[in-house]
Amino acid sequence: MGIILAVPVIGLDPQYEGLIKKASSILIIGAVAWVLANAVRIGEKAVLASYDISASDNLQARKVYTQVHVIAKTLLFIIVLFTVASILMCFEEVRRFGTSILASAGVVGIIIGFAAQRTIANLFAGFQLALTQPIRIDDVVIVEGEWGRVEEITLTYVVIRIWDERRLVVPLNHFIEKPFQNWTRTSAQLLGSVFFWVDYTLPVAELRAAIKDIVEKAPLWDGRFWNLQVTEATERGMQLRVLATASDSGNAWNLRCYLREKLIEYVQTHYRNSLPRVRLDAPGLNGSAFTHASIPDSART
Image 1 (cartoon, rainbow, N blue to C red):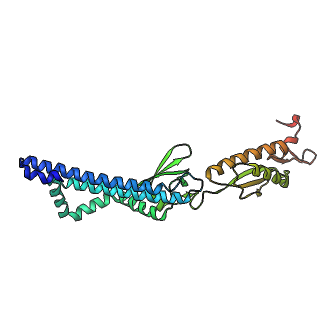
Image 2 (cartoon, one colour):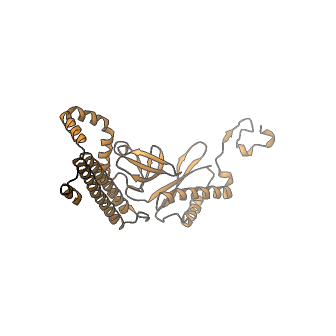
Image 3 (tube, helix red, strand yellow):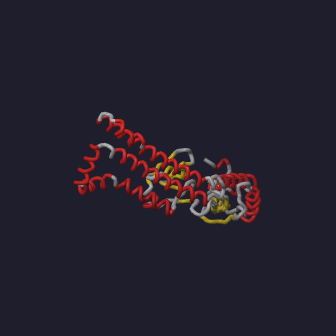
């Protein structure tokens, strides 16, 4: 500012005087933009410092993180937009171009509207997402058949960190217009399920007692609920379902794998003959029914 005021006093050549004024104006605009951008970043860090998103129960933290991130990115976008516009307006050629645009604002507006339709839709989706929060930072979601966590939310897209370390980039308006699964919308706790087919000869009550002991000793079980039920019966056998709760999606997945492994191990050890089998009715062999396991070796092909 001091340079701009001092230039007329110094009495420089008009060509250099105009150049110095433009350079000084650009520096002032850049400095103001830098101060505003840093103020936004400092404010963002100050607000988020009170919340620990790595905690096991981080629902409130994820709400605040999502809102603050979207608002901060929006403010930075506005600052950059006005900074670039202000710098360009320092040049006479740009001002004349702007005047010509205003003269044909109707046609240009229609062209820009069609060209930026998707971008504008995503920007409005970002504001809607920040207010309604169908997803938040670190939410566990299933999008396009992929399971992952919300890693980043920008003004136009969301980055999903897939379980195998891939990244799925999804436009923001996808979460407004299309259905998706959010496993941590209100709580991180989940109910895991394990399905297992067995023969009708397996004693369900005894297996339920064994599963009770297995679940209660599992370190990943959160102690809220478990059960074992027969959920389906066919001509070949019955389907068992084990349900058990866990504190979050990661523990629920590992608990399911653990219970499935222990269930297979227990049935193999104690009820080997109760694994699924095919029964045949052969009237030609004394009119009695038999299983594949009971056929003599000489009669097998």
